[in-house]
Structures are given as C-alpha cells and as structure tokens.
Image (cartoon, rainbow, N blue to C red; front, top):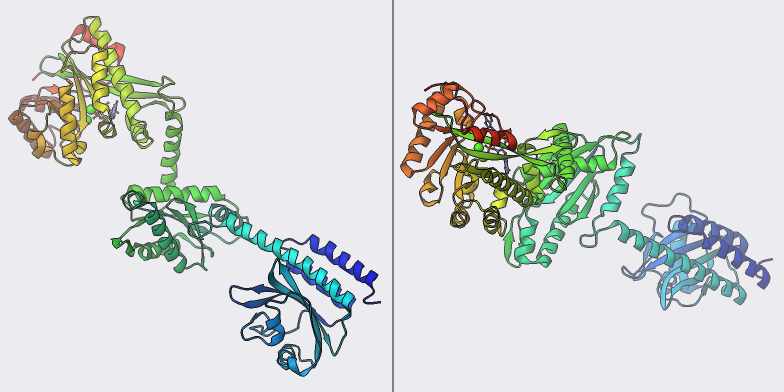
Amino acid sequence: MNGTPRSLDLMVKSVATQLMAATATTSVEVSQRVLADLVSYLGVDVSFLRYNDHKIRASRLIAEWPIRPNIPDPDPLEIVYFADADPVFAVSENAKKPVVLRPEPATDDYQRRIEESRAVPATSMAAAPLLSGNVTTGALGFIKFGDREWSTDELNALETIASLFAQVQARVLAEERLRYLAEHDDLTGLHNRRALLSHLDERLAAGRPGPVSTLFFDLDRLKAINDYLGHTAGDWFIRVLAERLRRSGDGENLIARLGGDEFVVVPRAAMDEAAATALAHQLQSALREQVSIDGEVLTRTVSIGVAQGTPGVDTTSDLLRRADQAVLTAKNSGGNKVAVFTDDMAMKNEFRNDIELHLQNVIESGALLLHYLPEVDMRTGEILAAEALVRWQHPTRGLLGPDAFIGVAESINLAGELGRWVMRSACADFAAWQSRGLGENIVMRINVSPVQLVIDGFVESVAGILEEFGLARGSVCLEITENVVVQDIETTRITLAALKAAGVQIAIDDFGTGYSAFSHLKSLPVDTLKIDRGFVRELGSDPGDLAIVRAIIALAEAFGLELVAEGVETEAAALTLLRHGCHRAQGFLLSRPIAGAALESLLSKGRLAIKFSA
Ligand code: C2E
Ligand code: CA
Ligand code: CA
C-alpha cells in the first residue's frame, strides 16, 4: 500500500492540513504528530525534524518520532555542529535536494553515532532539506533499521512535505521575532513595559507565592548627559546601565526598561521588603560604578523605589504605582537613595493627585480668591499694608490655604499662571479701593513663589500689571522668601534690581529662617524684612527667640530697612516687640486674614482697635 502515487497524494494532503493549523506554541507538538503519522505510513522506524542555525553552523533537533527512551544528558543529537559532524549531518547544512543513504562503508561514522544513541545496527535513511529561498533551513529525515529503497514518487512526496515543514518553520520564526519585538526594548534588549505588565499580572494572580517585590529605578540627572554630551551618549549610557543590571542577575530577576531612564526589576522569587531593600542597595552600588563616555568619566547615580504587592489582592497597576511613588520620594530627597513605599506616601500622593487634577483649571473655574491680612502700627492700630493671601474654594475639600496647593502648582508649571492671577487680582482690588478713596497710603504686599522669579518675562509682567491699574510707584511690595534670595544671589540681584526699576518694593519674607541673607543685605535692593513668625510666636517667654529678634531689629536699623513682625498672636509678643522698637506687625492678635470687602470696610475706618497698651 505504501508508495502508490495516489496514496502518497493523500498523505501529503493530510500532512498539509495538520501543519496548516500549527502556531509557534503548537508547532513542536504538531510536528511530532505528523512525524508519527509519517513513520507508520512510510513503514520506517524513526523520523526527525531538524532546523539549521547558520550563525553557529549547527543543526538543532526540533521533533522526533518515536521519542527515544532515556535520552542522555547532554543529548548528542540535540545540537550537532556541521564542522565536526559526520558526512550525513554535514550534507544537511546546504543540501538542496533529498538525499538517500543506504548501508555502505562511507557512512560508518553516521552509523556509529546512531548506534550510540539508539543501540541499533546498520540503517538506511532518506532526508529532504527544508528550504527558504536558497538557504537550507533544516532537514526532515526518515530512518529504517536495515535497508529500504526509496522510489522517486516517495522522494517527491518527501520534498513536498519538507516544504510544508519549511513554511511552518518560517511562520514560527516570524512569530517569535514579532513576539520578541513586542516584548523587548529596542535600545537595551531588556523586556519592555508590555512584558513587565504581563509578568506582573501572572505573578499577582490569586494563589501565586507572595509578596511580589518590585524595584523601580530612575537614573538621576540623565537629562544632563543628554544635554551636554548628546543623545548618542545618553543612549550609550542607558545601555551600559542595562548591561550592568543584566549581569547582576538576569536569571533571578525580570528586568524591564519602561522607556526613558526608568527601569524595573522584579525578583522572580517571592521576596519580602527587607530582602528587596537589600537587593536594591546591592544593585544601586553596582550601578554607581563609573562609566566613561568619549573620555569623560561619569559617575551617575540612581534612585530606587521599593514596593510589594500581594497576589490575589493587589493589581499590577497598584504595585507599579507604589514603586513609582517610592522612587519619586527617593528622587525628591536628593537622589541616589533607596526608598520603600509607605502608606503615608499613598495618602500624601492621593491628596496631591486630587489637588493636581482639580488645579488644572482652577483659574478658569473662578475658584481662587484672595484674603487680606492687615499689617498695622501696633502703637496706633493704623493700617499700613495688606498682604494678599491666596485661597482656593476646592469643589470637595472646602477652602484650602496656599500650603496645600502652591507646591503642587509649582511642580506642574502652574506657578506662573497662578502668580499672575494673584498679582492681577490683588492689584485690581487695590485699584478699586483707591478709586473709592480708600487705602491710598497703604502698601499691597504680594507673595511671589521662587519659581515665578525665574520665569522669563516676570518683571515685564509685573510692570504691565502696575501700569494697567495705574498704581503708584512703591505702593506694591513683592515678598520673596529668604531661602530663594540666597540660592542664586547673582540672578536674584539682577531680577530684584529690575523689579525696583519697575517701581515695586521688595520684602524678604520669613526672615531668620534657613540660609541667612544677612551678609547680602547690603548689596540687595531690599526695602523690608519680615521676621518669621516662628521667632515671634513665643516672644515674651523664649529668651532665645528674643535674642534673635533683637538682632534682626538691630540689623534692620543698621541697613535702614522697614521691619515687620509676622505672626503676633499674644499680647506678650506684641509688647515685647514694641519695647524693642518694632511696631509694624501682623498676626491673629491683630486680625485674621479677611475677605476683600471686610478689608475695604476696615480701610474706611482707617485703623484697628488695639486692645492692649504699651
Ligand atoms: P506667609 O507669607 O508667611 O504668610 C503669612 C501666613 O501666616 C498666612 O498663612 C497667614 O494666615 C498666617 N498668619 C498670619 N498671622 C498669623 C498668626 O498670628 N499665627 C499664625 N499661626 N499664622 C498667622 P497662609 O495664608 O496659610 O499662607 C501660607 C503661606 O503661603 C504664606 O506664608 C505664603 O508664603 C504663601 N502664600 C500665600 N499666598 C500666596 C500667593 O498668592 N502666592 C504665593 N506664591 N504664595 C502664597
Ligand atoms: Ca508673606
Ligand atoms: Ca512669612
């Protein structure tokens, strides 16, 4: 029954049908089934399918039938290098046509190799090459123990079947290539985001061992490398770091690059926080080594965030969010740190996100408003100035003070816009009061965020607003915190000089805290110092505070600066200040921050009632 053209035809058809359904995942299994069919159909003893790997000049066993019992390890038939292979294997490196070998002396080597692994004597064989264009990509082989003749029709059928196998091979390779590309990062060859997500999804499934630890890496100051040395250097730097990560444990960890300078390492074993933190420190020091690029030796550091997820409880995005929050904390505390995720971080972050979300359109939505804090002469109660303090009528959280959102606004580049809103609104109110004959002698004090100071066109924008509302020179004072003044003294000097030229006064806010601006006072165009409320609160009871306040008072006198005490809450503080010659002040003892209308009516009275006497 074997070998008639018609039955061979049917055999080819059956093979074609089976192989057509094969995918990358099922190809080995399907191939094995087909080989089994062919063994019985052709009446041979063994069949095999091998793929060529021309890069290493070797042939690799893909499927065989029957499967040998007790396969030795290493299996001598698994990978066979053409260079040291017997002639039978050697021929399959580049064969283009079916080859038939019958027992004869020339194939002794081959016989021995087969005997070694099969323990059977003299055999005959037919092999058809798998071809892809001109390249021999593998071989389909059939072995008969003892001798067997192969008809031309049979060899033609084998050639056809081999071409069907070659098609499957091409499809599998294409699929694997696609999958590789889909799951790996081009630049580094590490896994990509998609691969990371599917790995974590699997690991966090209910019933899997936990906790699952995740280490989130962020290269510190990669931007500087890109900026100063170019993107090629930046890319090279990323590749070096990827390689170091890989070398320090590719097998035990899944390593992914999320793009940019972000890497994630997931230990494949369940790992608790302590072990994960230790691993993070270990990797951190491995990455800290120097790298040389174009002769420049760079020591770059990484920030690492560590977080845990519980299978069946946490999702992949929970886990990554935590790790991301932790790395943010590490970065914000100066970089080159390992930070472990905490619940406190989660709460702060939730608040922040919510603020950020609503802050985006806070200005258009008209939810911002200003309160004013009167500044008075404590001897008379006369109102000398008003400080504009921004408030936010938040849709769900009520009236928020600036501490809750100024920082967030700065971090999402909203400080400029928000600052302009405050400036225009305060000046508009101020101009409106003056148009009604009120507050013509007071100063409007406006807080300026450090970020605003360095925004291009800041001075011009201030000058424009003063002009728009026709406010007198010197009637508006900008408050700048002491820290900012000292940080970049040269830039500050230039900006402040330009502001002065535009007709605004300058006050140093929170004076006495942080880095001292003492030494620069002489060279900066400053009009007023505001003593930080931290020193004022306990005046009258804390002698240390009194010493500082007295020093500031002396300093202001020496430089001819106005002095304002902030945060006067008690009569004792007020009296102490008065006794030492500081009579301008603001604070809850005198007045709370009040709405614009309330300030206006206060201005119409001209003064506050002073309830204490010096
Ligand atoms: P600051 O410039 O030191 O403003 C004074 C703050 O102290 C105000 O808080 C005010 O309500 C509070 N205060 C006044 N008297 C007392 C007192 O006797 N005791 C106590 N404990 N506090 C008193 P607020 O309105 O929460 O402002 C906080 C900070 O937010 C301000 O500190 C200022 O640095 C900033 N800020 C306020 N408005 C703006 C703004 O429009 N833009 C910018 N960039 N920052 C602003
Ligand atoms: Ca202030
Ligand atoms: Ca202050």
